[in-house]
Image (cartoon, rainbow, N blue to C red; front, side, top):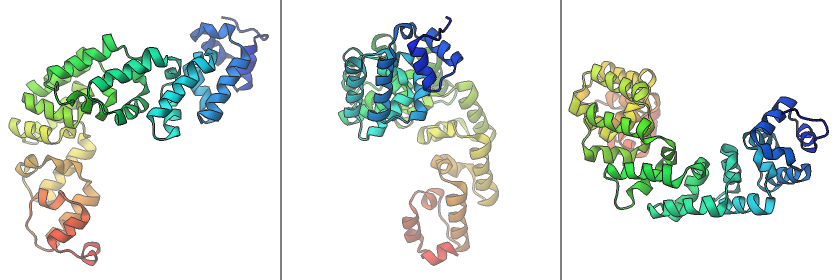
Length: 333
């Protein structure tokens, strides 16, 4: 569409720093802009900046993502949504952040979309105090269909045995982004890989999903399989890998080059320990190599202390010093 110089909305956009190609793109994206009044657009712009607290420099990005925002009636759509979102959050800045993440959230109806969504999650056992955290952390949730998208994912999670004691609600609170993935293209293939290749039992799958649901969202061929193959190359047996993944699921998404290799190298070549010990304490891969593993190993070695990896690492600094009788002077020398 050709943008005319007499268009009041065009002059509004120009005044806000938009160039003609950007304006034309928004007009093609939102046909309602053709009839939009600059005074309505200005009122909505000022509301988002002065009342909601969105930084002026971020508004062009937000409007370009969802130009429809400038055509909506302030009292009928924007204010009700912002007030409802504000009631869900603890900090006013959370609402501004949510809108910046997903501007189209403002184009949805509170009654038709947000309220049913909140009721849906409450029925899954999501505590009222956590509802706001979920929506504001992943505002894209409001755009998903309950019937054709969210219910399908809930049914899949239930098929994994997470159908009691509010388990699904707890999983979604931990990772609201899980609801954005396809069951057939991502969640099911990942689960099948964990069962068939890694060898996790049904209880093992449940444990992994409850403790680290992000694992289900990772690509099998790009991330999970390369990590699994590396663990096999290191000499870990099938049952050991299954135990490690159940105990510390993150082991399948850690960088092989930057995380797994340096730790295993230090474990074997410097500490002189075997793979069996790390197989029974996979949380070893969680601890910082320089700040925790190396520094504590130097202390126990210097003082001729014989201890397991768990005894050495599975406590905070104060308890570590108390356990082995180290003073602050000894620890820092």
